[in-house]
Image (tube, rainbow, N blue to C red; front, side):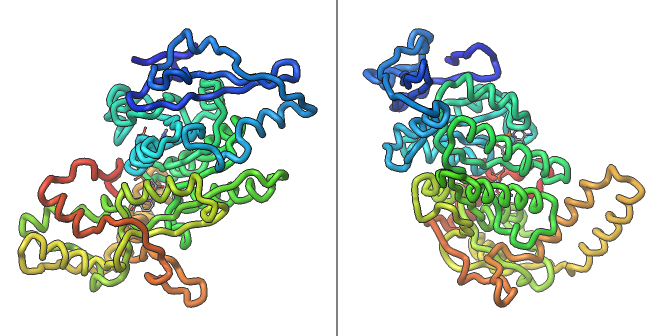
Length: 421
Ligand SMILES: NC(=O)c1ccc[n+]([C@@H]2O[C@H](COP(=O)([O-])OP(=O)(O)OC[C@H]3O[C@@H](n4cnc5c(N)ncnc54)[C@H](OP(=O)(O)O)[C@@H]3O)[C@@H](O)[C@H]2O)c1
């Protein structure tokens, strides 16, 4: 059941698990009033219109600067609060990583407000009901992150302060304009809207590859990263902080050849298969690391490159692993990287005549980048990628993942709209 709050842009949905009371505060003639949106005496009780009539339960904080006080009372030192009293806004909650992040935060007891589109997922294939099912335990806010006013209005209608914003937004295509619209503008909208509701911390899912930005989505992400850091630096009270998470490769990006190898086809790789390496990380492990960033003070105001457990793996090693698991002799098709360079130069030439081919050229560059650049920390001193300097986190290994996909198939590991990442 969904309860609409005055417009159909924003809906609150009761969750089946334990729900902590959500508080809202506002000033009335210099007095701070606190209201429950959920019933404290019956936490599992769903939101209802009656409860939303807002019974004031506390009063009396005199103030000189009312606005400032509202912010301070609603959000100050959220890290000392019980997770049940911390409101976390998750944008990009319907993505490959975002849905695991939302679930992890719910499991850790936070009040999760998950922003979603009414048609979500790859090519908008998921209905509202499927989204609600997927984000069980969170309050789902159907809104638009690409329109600041709409997002702000949705959060206003919710009537609760926000403590932390977690962004897992990303362009689903990696196209030039869409990258700027989502990885920069929409992410910035979520920062502005969240801050307006009192957010004191922002956790950003970025990517390790922004260290060597050659692609538009990397430039868009970097620009937002820089502005986020400036926001924290220029915060006069020093109360606003960030955690920028830069993961290495996701499992889904390495699973594209599992089925082919199973069918006896060769594993395709560029050069000698050692041009690049990564420390793959699972959705669950990354979600857990992101959730740690909400409260861990040692992750505050830091850029955090992160990989999965074990050693770094080259495409050659991934191919060998896969062949071993299917019980076949390793068979490789080595493609010279120069072929990609040639294709990109042709596309770049065509873009000058047909600007509409801009995205096709960009996708070629994305493919080239992933074929040759490691998803590891780029050592500033040596200028080389360093597996040793890339921290490991979690327990899920690529080998276990390959085994699972060989048995159960690729469900949940689908690539984005252009099948690139
Ligand atoms: N693939 C890799 O190996 C890898 C490695 C390191 C870092 N990363 C980075 O990790 C991040 C997340 O990746 P992911 O695979 O989880 O992304 P994803 O599955 O493509 O999810 C993207 C999220 O952004 C939302 N979004 C996209 N366009 C939107 C729009 N126009 N309006 C509203 N919401 C929109 C999507 O909502 P809908 O469901 O409504 O579309 C979805 O929730 C990316 O920044 C990526 O660069 C990826």
